[in-house]
Image (cartoon, rainbow, N blue to C red; front, side):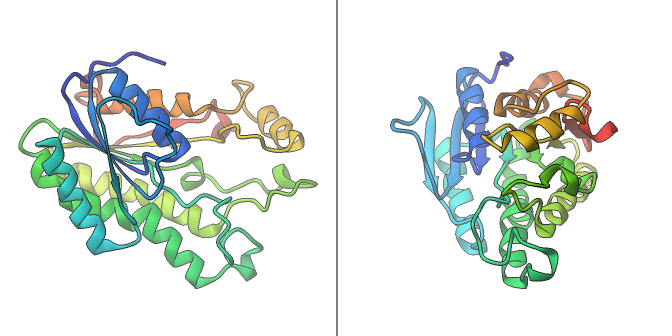
Length: 253
């Protein structure tokens, strides 16, 4: 873990209860930040110091707006918004991670709501608080917002691949990043696009993925957190509108 100074910074992490969100939250609080988490799940047996859990259904626009304002009030301001909420391929929603012709509009709508629309709503709600200081926004996208999935990686496994709504929503975050970076300046807006993260996938998949990756391994949550926290820190004070690809070179091949 790379140490960053976030002393007394006030941060909202949307999706902070997920694997990536937990790593980001720990790194922020280790650096001295106060963090409000917007999520429907809080997996910790005891919450880290300086963390405010706020239950929020990010598919619900009105609730997301209310809970965001609640977070800003409880933090007494805002310096950073991080959006890492995502409906991933293993979400178990019918009609989501299946053959393309079997994917449904209902599943598409939920994925777009969680992965993209909530980022738009949060940006609207947070901007007035962010412009009061030297705030910034970091979205977590995916390499599948940049490149198409390689179906051969999944052959002979029980993995269905990448839902189209996941790829489209993650690509949408890249467009939102560029738009808001121009609209919100001097508030900085950036994005991180991680490659595949190792999470007990079948060995056949891991072997194929690793063979395509010049750095010779899949990512960990900490790899993503380091990149997000760098962009959120003062060390990236002149970086805006950027998509930081963190994939060990996978997308080069």
